[in-house]
Image 1 (cartoon, rainbow, N blue to C red):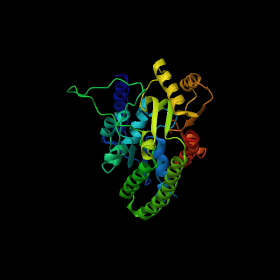
Image 2 (cartoon, rainbow, N blue to C red; image 1 turned 90 degrees about the vertical axis):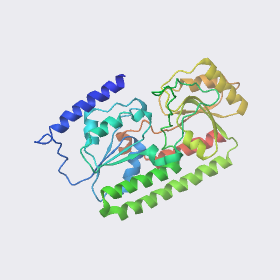
Image 3 (cartoon, rainbow, N blue to C red; image 1 turned 60 degrees about the vertical axis):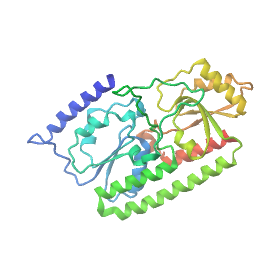
Image 4 (tube, rainbow, N blue to C red; image 1 turned 180 degrees about the vertical axis):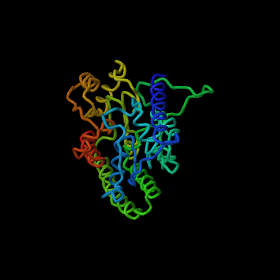
Length: 328
């Protein structure tokens, strides 16, 4: 309810700001000829930049969640709403955490805006969140008629195969807003997709060469798409979109017993400073000597990270090295 109130206030201020842009009460889109593209999360932003390449249209690309705010707890500001309302292309994930988008798009003043919903672009490839053995289940929300609402796993970017599909959707969107440079974007897409395909092959080889076929996360688990791509099994404390940070003793003991049973050498976490659950799991195993390694789910990447040279491909390459260790 609090999040909805924040969104309503942001939309109200955005509406006031937009109405003040034009003398007749209508919004006056920026007079610049450059394109404006808004991407909610880092992977979308990096994909756009790779497809733009040398950026012949001099497009201005905004990373909306650029200060480390998690997708699941993000609330748009009035300025964010205005950026979305006046842009030429808007890219968002499309899961439950993006419930605010519908109201934001109602403020749109660009009738030709191209909107890309990643989950919709995946079609049948989108996956529902699942509860596996030992995982702490969260309470399911019910729809208007008492039926449980389907909640899709939002972390669609953590699959190189998804990335190829989604980059194609983005390239097609760029062609719509800038047809004059379509051949450039298509060529850049081909080059980038090849990089994704090569890395996908390396993942397949690593999984095939590994002595284990199971990963264990003493944390949230946003890597469902990745593990499904390569036929891996998994155990975890929470689903990927969980807001929980404390695991029950039963969950910790279950995970510790699984580490022993499967003779795992590595306990995995996602990015973040606190890895208390992983520490506790390891301390409850028989040998207490497992490594704690981090797979980066890219949920906290910032604009500063971008300036420092962080890229989607680089993070997925680093994740591959961690996965090799976990499967050895």
